Image 1: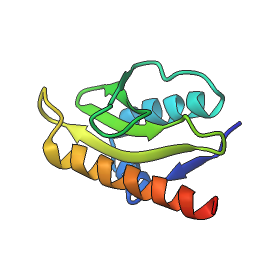
Image 2 (image 1 turned 180 degrees about the horizontal axis):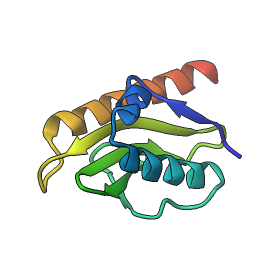
Image 3 (image 1 turned 45 degrees about the horizontal axis):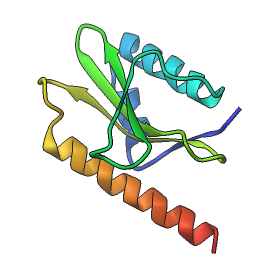
Amino acid sequence: MKPLHWIGSALADLRAFPEDARRVGGHNLHLLQLGFEAEDWKPMPTVGAGVYEIRIHTATEHRIFYVAKFEEAVYALHCFEKKSQRTPTRDLELGRSRYRTLLRERRTRNE
């Protein structure tokens, strides 16, 4: 089972979700750790290569940006409530920023 690493405030943000959304998100992240696909996901190439989002449909919509392509871990980049059809620019930018940080940290560790 791959460990799950949280980037930035992703864990605190997930903990702020309503209980039903937290449960669905946690279950899907656990599936990723076991090497399976999330139940409802979508690629997010605008955030970064290999970045996907878990789509959580409860009374409100929630999303989790993640990367599972690396051998060492699954990385949760950003967790947020989605209030409109389009993903807000600030959420995309935050996901991109955290993805770039992750890539820099991995490069530094491997040098």
